Length: 211
Image (cartoon, rainbow, N blue to C red; front, side):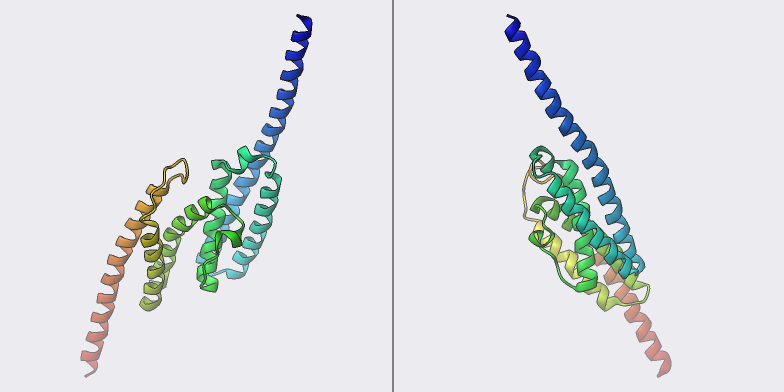
């Protein structure tokens, strides 16, 4: 009987050590994911402000942080595929995608970012809101042509993601994000049409006044 008791104590001790290690890793991951989310937000803000050099610096810093975190979690699959990590990677993807579209006129792939397709998709849908914000800033300079080009990008994002139908267990928040993208696209389209009509009217009145 004593032998069984000793075995129980031994097994529980091993489990305790295992869980303590996991908990320590989890606490460290929480800190690092918060840092990634914060830095991604700063990078996006820099892009909106037109400080591309600082945004580029932050993006490069983010790549290092994400790579280090993913390497740390290779032996911890329960954290590697957790919402804790995916939320941070989605923010990272959003920053990378937004930067690439605005600065380089291209779209990075999940493989290029070295992240799972799920947080990439989440980030791609989230970038719709940032592109809308960027598009509105273009209208301050009455750059309607460029505004329409950026609109076409978010319209395409919505159109190609609209048919996707996966449960939250696979892609958390997919339906909600697609619905938000639809609302953004519809509202921005209506706004751009209105602005374009106003600008055309202003130009027509100028022509008449000069004739």
